[in-house]
Structure formats: C-alpha cells, structure tokens
Length: 224
Image: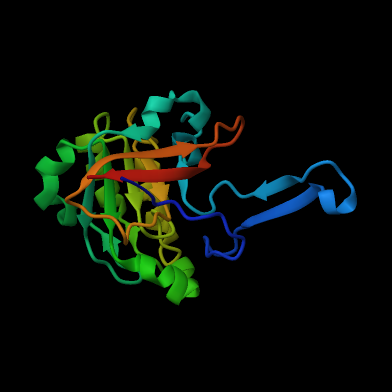
C-alpha cells in the first residue's frame, strides 16, 4: 500500500518566514471562451514538501536535474521517532543509538511530532520549528554519505528561523560544501500517518528544472 507524504501545494500553507509561496495565474479559460484551461505557475522552489540539492548551499554542487531518477527512489527507508519541541535541535547524540540501522538505510525519515503545528499553529511551525544541528549534519555526512541518499524531516526546514547561523552551517554540511559527499534534504514532510515497522519503499520525485538548485517533490512511502 502506498501513502502520499508530501503536502498539496497550497499558497496559504506555512513556509520559511518571509519567503514567497505559490500563485496560479489563469492563462486560458473555457469560461472565457477558450478551448481549455491552462495556468502559469509562480512557485517558489523551497516551498511545501521539497528537496534541497547540493547546489543550494554549495556553489560547486550539482543541481537536481543532473541526477538519474533512481537517485530519488529508496529501497531501505528508516523512520525514527525523535520528539522535539519548538526551537530544539536534533543532535548527533540523538542518532548514536540508531547507528547500525542508519548504516543499513538509504533514506532516513525523522519524525519529531512537530507536524501537528502546521495546522494548529502555522506561525510557530514557520518561525520556530525544530532543526538539525550542524554537529548532527556533520555526523551524518561523515559516517553515512554515499549509502544514505536522503534525510526527510517533518518540519519546515533543516534549519530553524530561531538560529539561522547554525542552520546555514548544517545546510553546508549536508550539501557537500566541506567534503565531496552530500545527503539530499527533504523538508516539510507529512509523517504522522505512517508506521516505522511497516515501511518497505519510498520515493521523492522532483521536477527536473534547469537552472535552479532545488525543487518541490511528490513523495510517497510503501507499507506492508
């Protein structure tokens, strides 16, 4: 059974504070006498469920369209429950107990429970979410890059708007700024309805857009 875990793209959904969201501009309309409906999309590429490519924080990094499609399909997903509150960071010590499981995985999904605020308190979700510390990002890249292809999170960004300095550093580690290795970052993922025990497969398929660093994704998991 497959479950969609990316959010519909909704202009009213919370995103990183101050960033654009999404607009659909009607270009042709049956109601106006045209033969079909068409739209021009104004979509910020870091809004909604999206993937950060190495280029995002690394000028020498690759863009998403340069990777083969198999890059975005995961045969060994791992979901970890690591509860965090507003502004709290996932530290390397939070990951140590799961070292062997992470080593056997190709995508790590971290569920903090903060997803509930996306609807209940969108301002908090946007402005003071949890984060992955730069120490934890460094740990993941140094120990698992190459085998672990992606990290998915149930909050708005790898960084929290409450500490952008450490958040920028965490992004640099994940995007391969300090090494030749990277781990894709998938942010703003819906995880509340999936089971850690039943995950069998996952995918996060981006738009293959030229010239830009990153893209919204359609993401799903397969459960037994």
